[in-house]
Image (tube, rainbow, N blue to C red; front, side, top):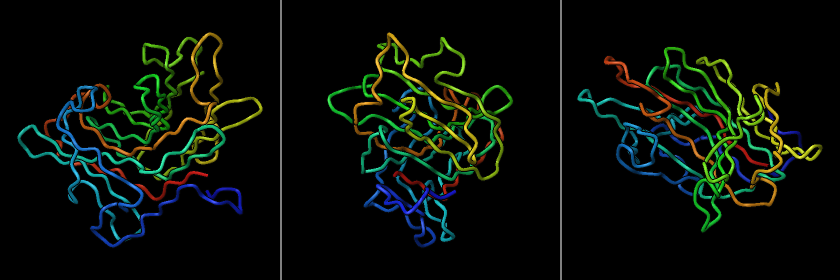
Length: 244
């Protein structure tokens, strides 16, 4: 699914590097930290090792979570150096997510407008796959800076939506719409969620604040849940990421 063209991308990575190469350092940087470093009770250590994040030489980026066989796990979390407003833009990625208990892959955006801290900066989880509960599923959610770090969940479907999860390739898109002002989410070209600003709440997606986008594969924690004893590894594959 290409952008309606011709179009000039603000950000575009097709991951066409050599086999084993890291993601393009002019476009991406690594978040590094041990278990729990980024909250959510996650179990993995995020590294910049080629074992955990590499281009495969066939046009894909691989983010790989690996067990050390002793209760420890390594994985990768990368984010764009460039920052782009949600307002007025479309964000799209083609992904293949693992369907694995104990894992928590995600493609998301975080506000990068200092000195605002979370949740005041804003966060959009474009797609994340929860591996707990015995039946992994996808979720899209829009967080608001309401002091609770919460999603507006008083209106069903207003700011979050669950989707079936499988191991196939899918194109996920978040697009800004002006009529009405909203965030519109689609999977393979089919719209499944439209998020509108809610009366009486803060809304940080209409003012041009900068956001960077992240890709990561967590293990365990609030979203991954208990990790099966036999878990050895899981992979998240990325075909491309684009912003226009």
